[in-house]
Image (cartoon, rainbow, N blue to C red; front, side, top):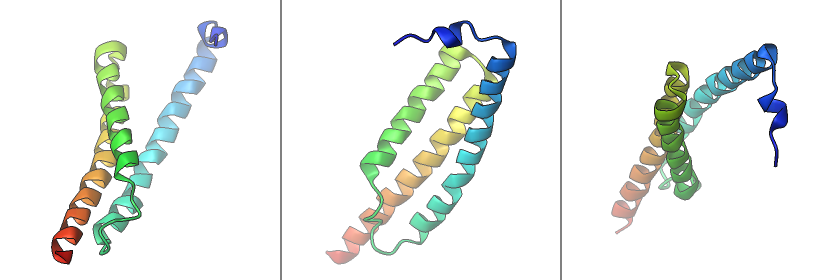
Length: 107
């Protein structure tokens, strides 16, 4: 697969891609809030939350953060990666906690 279109992209196209990245990730950050609230209020052990999926997203965001720090070296990219890591991490940790609490009560 070749990415020649990106290699020859001019300034306006790269700026558009940058703004779209910022916009979509700003919206993405807001989408964590309802998920965190739902999982926090969960009384059934968060059985409908896939810890494997959220855990893989946490790992993906760890990788993105490391890439942002060591390769891209862009403060905004680092900040976006960290916020996404925190959002995914919060959902995964709260769901895991709810699941542990639910199991403890059922014993």
